[in-house]
Amino acid sequence: MRIFLVYFLFCQLVIGQKEELAINFIDNDLNAALDQAKKDQILIFIDAYTTWCGPCKMMDRDVFTDSAVGQFFNTNFVNLKLDMEKGSGIGVAQKYQVRGYPSFLFINAEGVLIHQGIGYQPVPAFMGMATVALDPSKQLPALEKAYRNGDKSEDLLYNYTNALIEAHDEKSKVIGKEYLASQPSWTTRKNMELVGQLVSEYDDLYYNFIVEKRHLFIKEFGEGRVDGAILRQIENHLFTNIEKVDMEKAKQIYVQTFPSSKAGVYFDNFELDYYDALGKKDIYVDKARRYVKRYPNLSSIALNGLAWNFYEKIDDKKALKWAAKWAQKSVDLEDAYFNNDTLAALYYKQNNKKKALKYALKAIELAKAEGSDFSETSALLEQIEQLP
Image (cartoon, rainbow, N blue to C red):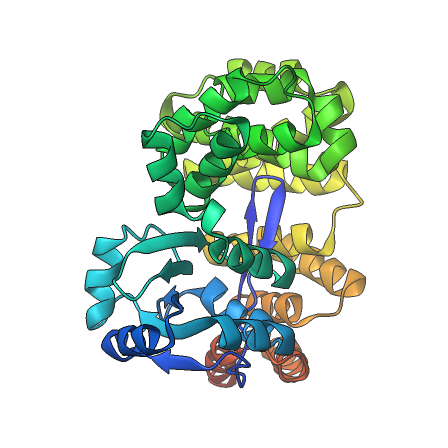
């Protein structure tokens, strides 16, 4: 498990050890699932996964083990776990245009795609997705047929848009625009939620509306979620051609988009990743050091992200000592597997065997308590033990 810094937003990926699942899955046997679905006259739920997918393992650990989830899925679906890189999974990935992992496919016994979702989903969202899959009025084929037959009612357009969004179908932009054009206001919670799902690029119709009504979106959904959505579009825009970014113009985007209390920190985060992405190590190291001093209340995850990035990319001895201090502060704020592992790695890179051993062993102990995979730390421990 590693922690990565991505701009100012940080995502912790925790890969759990294998758990006993509450959902009764058929394992990688599509024909058996189809036969069972025909016999029981119910839908098939496919957990479309890969062996290297971290969020897939998180679903196994956090969601598929839930007893309520198991009872619901075992009652309403034939459940199939299907590796998308082996056997019939390869054809399924192509047939249903699987674009990411995990993907969740709901098909009938004839193999028609009824509904789908993508990405790690906590229990409430996962159950909501399955409930929609069982509702004929919200199933994608029925919605498509009704639309083709001339149904342009508000409910149909709204449900159709959401089904297309779940399926990651670009047609959602067309139907969503048609739905919103029929609305007297875009600022109801329901419509703002939809706008947030439809936004896909910097300076598009939906992006500009969110920026214009940022205060209303924050009131409904919280500052972190709203600013995160805006920042993703800005960052995607800037990093599309990172070598040609004009930093003054980039700074103006942040200044014009956010209040002064936020624009500075958001731009500083972008600036860090800009120099990191271009491989300008000396500038990046200096900017990172100044960044940590400027923002003394960085979170444990933020500090760890910077420290780990230094471990991976920086060889300067003085800079590695700074990174070790950041990792230590991260541990002081939150004594966890991920940052003890980072601290061990940094001391190993500095040839400090005693401290590297201390924190590697501690990281493994914490990982065992958390039920996390610590194989990478075990490999690091073997390297540490070879130090003189």
